[in-house]
Image 1 (cartoon, rainbow, N blue to C red):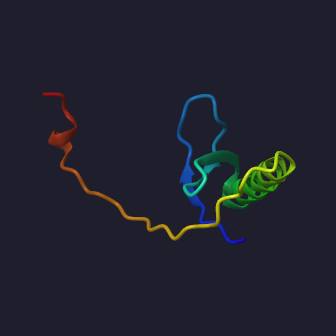
Image 2: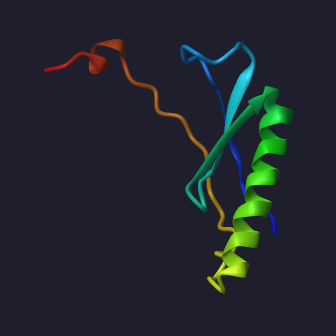
Length: 82
């Protein structure tokens, strides 16, 4: 199975520098790790555990879906409340 993963650097208070989120959009799963490779390994572990749990419960495991990544550029004044 080949699931798409989206990586996002974490700039939140409480996280040491260099950590990234790994989002699996097809399944609604998110984890994190140190660097992109750490986040990738955390996602691999999460996916393996999640799939094993689904199979043990005789639940269907959704097939990977195609997903696209894009950005949306908003002007600074669009972020102010009305």
